Image (cartoon, rainbow, N blue to C red; front, side, top):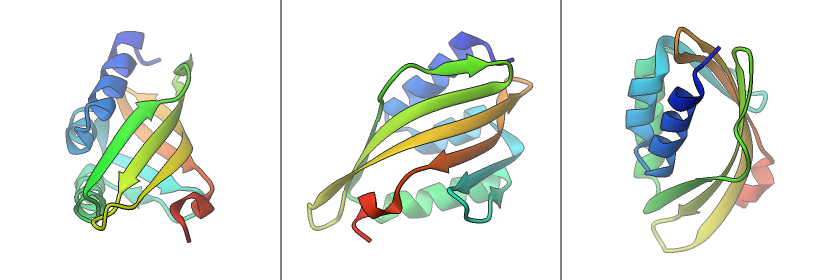
Length: 121
């Protein structure tokens, strides 16, 4: 079971905008992330590269926890609200639920649940 202080540290780092730092510090080396029902991306190095690519596509990304962090055993659920600013200044907000499985003080698996229509697609 992840320690509440560790999970709170993860949330604080994400809210500070250090998304790559959060991946490097809190995700297991063989961690996986899955977006809705897309195939998961596996391996911290792959996740960091993917995050850097996403970040490069936007002028800014701001994250805020949108409710309490729920911890039950090794499962953690976080409701996030992300505001993405495109290069042209247009913005959109993405509300999502992150469902995580922690192991050994790090995130082993994470799945994001969100409506892709929020991105204007």
